[in-house]
Length: 289
Image 1 (tube, rainbow, N blue to C red):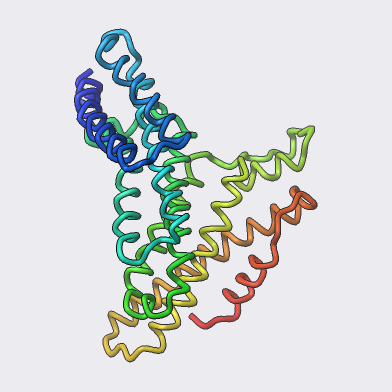
Image 2 (image 1 turned 60 degrees about the vertical axis):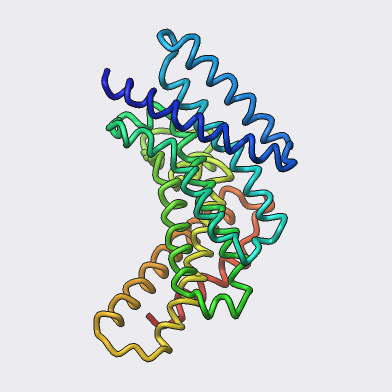
């Protein structure tokens, strides 16, 4: 199959680049658990690729590659968080990491294997790649929104980071279809059935709802209101601003409503806090478009 041959060739190029990245990180003193896991996975990948290329299932190679990407970038993400996202280079680093986390899917697109991509990589890996991109942008935006001078000077960049982060999290939530609960079918655990019907398949899915809702809140509060208060003179600019604010509002309301319903319904008493989610929902409902 030509597409698979293309993927194998493209994979080898990416393995070499990822190996160089790993070597640079370890050479700079990085040697934690995730880097060691990434190194072990890369070695296994190279052995499988070079020694048993004819026998190995391409899906296994691509899944191992995605796992190596996840492990190695996780070390770098933790560095950024520990350093509180340094203002002079963290935005570029965040962009770089989101690009690397997109590489497994880009590889499949490059070789026109789009229709089979979910089955080749697996739903869980796809979810994890998008979750990591969305969560990274969430953490970045959570930090920089407190830097008032930076925010004033970079409001468009901030808005794009929020939009991209929400997009990644919404994509992560879209890979599995919510369970269709049929009244004629009985479930032993009705709480679990209700969660699955809302698209909550794990704690990470629930966090993705909260994070995306919170990012929409930041978008409406910091970008929407600033735009409305600025002296925009063209109808086109005003229309774009209103459209973006409406998107933040509607997506945010939808996600936080689902989050609160799950936490105060099936997950009640299990430690999920809804106070800030309710406050943000109140803001969405009262603030002007």
